[in-house]
Image 1 (cartoon, rainbow, N blue to C red):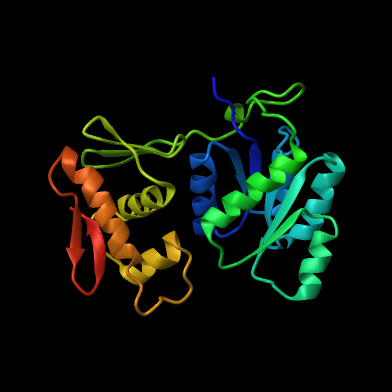
Image 2 (cartoon, rainbow, N blue to C red; image 1 turned 135 degrees about the horizontal axis):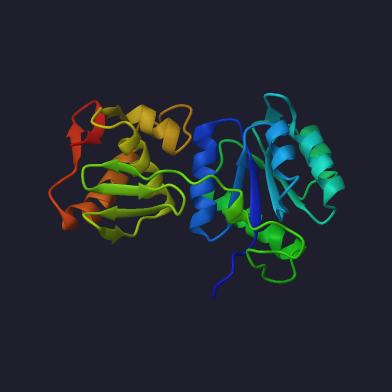
Length: 242
């Protein structure tokens, strides 16, 4: 059986960013745990042993750097990667004083996965199974979510898999994130700038960006072979599901 390359604790209070990180990491076979506050992260790690922590520096109830120090006290071999909008040299040097890497926002999701993978290669000399000696299997602590449904579409938010009319659809992390956001909005037309913010984390819409149109075409190509067209376009506004 193929083992997971490691378990990553993602601590991020912005739900859309946490979702994108979780989708991408799980797509690359990482086990993922998520928390939105320092308190949640500390409670979660009372019963689990992550191999890496991806920490936002600015959290609602504290500083991610302080959380990193506390997690390192509990598990000295833990890999710590900071994710933040702060990019001043003094901030970076300070964080790298005890962390393993530092990624600034806005980020490229592929770069985040590559950085986490590289850090774990340095801190984990061997592949890890899902159940560690003296630890609790991650599947036992992750909440099980009911599938999202729209028409004959079904999205499993535990396994990040998609089925249409009972047949499996292979999607990339970005395609999955885009489809899930459309499903969560039901039959509503979602403006393009809203999709860019929630799926691609763009704070300001690039004037010539065609990334949404490109990924909508990818989704249509994969979904429309299994049934009638499911994605609708409102010209000059955005996209939705029929």
